[in-house]
Image (tube, rainbow, N blue to C red; front, side, top):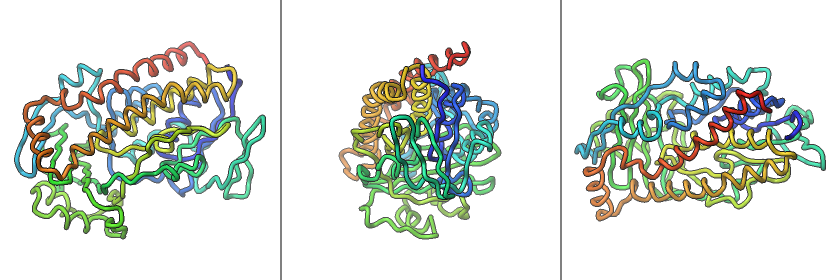
Length: 396
């Protein structure tokens, strides 16, 4: 196995914090560099399936996670204001080993950072360049310092400077807006519930949270140049969605907060190379995908476990990185394809496709609607079990 490694992680999102925690669990020295003055996030919420939150449990985050998450038990799908179907998540939860969990991205990042320890996190620090020799990597920092590392984990998102990911960015064809509703501004819906609303070239999610809150997303087809970047995060999507759904109208009439965001959505198609010597990517830095399947944060956490596990088991850094790539790349390629197909149907403007989609939803259960992501959830169990067992045995 590799010796006690010195790991540098670039990026303080879910992927970076997950990688730092996983490496820390394996007994490695870890330093995380985040370019912002605080743990920045795009806002809004995330959904974690029965492979995402077991990873958090292994990483020591479960006690904090339990305080900020809401288990989703009910599902309802609408076409505008017309109810297509409603169902329970019970059968799906039994099949995959647990329910869907809903939480805010920023709250999860704060919980993970607390477990990692502030002494391991360097905020307001940009990695401006990386050089390597046979024995180490050297990171030039915005502070003027030079840090060394045995492995550099690039968790700096789809525009990854460490891996040059922006060169393979692809615009998905839609924009993405979201935010959080507080108390009296919430949509009237049962607790522990996910609402999905479909329309012509658009869709929305509304999920419940603890403490009488909800988070929401709206995705809408549009040309890349049609997306408006401004301080007002809601006006464009409010105009685009006017009259589509009374629930969405309600959501978009709420006061704007720091949790509101508006983003054009890009993905990778796919990246042929996940590493450069001692630099290796995880999460969106290497396999960014759209949000319509809701699995991005989950896959980043499994990336983190797999990479740390391979670094602890292989004789060299390079063989560990190679094994990680070989094991994860085909799976992520398949999942990216699932997401692209999902978005094409859910955000279709073709009336014939919409009719077939709605008919399928009306005739299906929640478990059947989520069939295509079950293999990813179930297939991650071995990685989680393997990591857990070596931690229990004290293996590093």
